[in-house]
Amino acid sequence: MKIAIVVQRYGSEINGGAELHARYVAERLSRHATVEVLTTCAKDYLTWKNEWPSGEETVNGIRVRRFPVSCPRNTDDFGRRSALVFDRQHSLADELAWLDSEGPKSPALIRHIDQVRDKFDFFLFFSARYYHAWHGARAVRGKAILVPTAERDPAMGLHMFGPMFRDVRALMYNSFEERDLIHGVSGNQAVPGVVVGVGSAIPERTQPWRFRKKFNVKRPFAIYIGRIDDNKGCPALFEHFINYAANYPRGLDLILLGKAVIPVPSHPRLRAVGFVSEEDKFDGLAAADLLVMPSQFESLSMVALEAWALGKPVLVNGACDVLRGQTLRANGGLCYESFDEFAEAMYCLEASGPIGAILGRQGREFFKRHYAWPVIEKKYLDMFDRLKRDSSVRPVEPWPGWWARRRRTLPPARQIVDSVPAGPVLR
Picture (tube, rainbow, N blue to C red):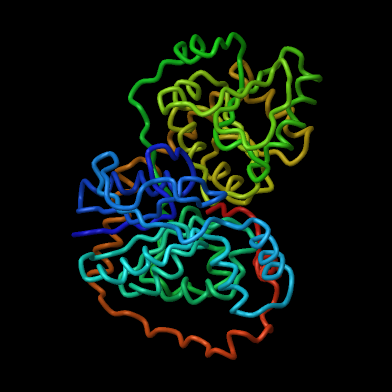
């Protein structure tokens, strides 16, 4: 069996999000099939500037083909087009122009996908909202499997994505909340799909003391791992933590791991140590009392799964349906939606607190049952087998003509997403 994994950017330097998800899946599926990655030359998700050379290379034993992005993102243009399609009545042509503006636009990648369609059994497209997934899935619709990595954001309400969700052979969802959101906006319940998520490369042993020594950490602490950015809820986290530190002088410190896109406040109990290695990340998780996840928009929190794998409880933003549902199903942490809830939860989850160790153990059992790699791999392999047994392809939905694509009769995408029931899925 030969599998192509198509993703917006790819490399061992990218340590989060859908791109890390794609790399983990590629490396694990390579044990069962021939895997090749098709991606762009972009390294930065904000600019999509070509930084890697086009052509072939090998990354951790996986063959990777890179194709150039036709132009970097123009943030002003993208902002204007987003405001139009998210908040105003618009046309299908407006949505397609938004997709081009969002990037990374790579016609060369799409041409290659079309040219090699007969060489692969299936194409796994990561991240539904991007150019390569929409155009690529249309090019090989009989072999396209989508890993949407969709969050509850207005983009999922765009009319153009409905046919894609209904036309692919199957979807590999990250969470029950993501599945229900996509069902709600597209009505694709008849398309085969499974909630699979992703595993993680958990080390057999960690050395908490090594992290403490390397970064001169002497006090107990909570840890945040990921991009330090507005979109990840970091400003609210900073505000909550500074108030917490004032009210709990003997409480936990907060250590941040990841690239800082926004300024980090200067505070004696708040430290950002920057981008770190995988070894340092897992040592830091093992040394921490708990993991904090302040993001309001997630399709799955890989770092929460990693914390549970190490027996650590999590504290998540309860306004994010996915994080709340994930935490409640695991019974592996607490949720907060206000400063008071944040502060009380920090106290409860301290290593010396009443329930942190219990929730951490429950999270570890949840990880073993649902997110250990043998479980994840089996779900992918079972889906491949299912699709091979049923080779029928649904009739393609007719595409509107030139004039119909330009009629501004489509409702704001935000309105569509807001109409879909929200909340965690507890089953």
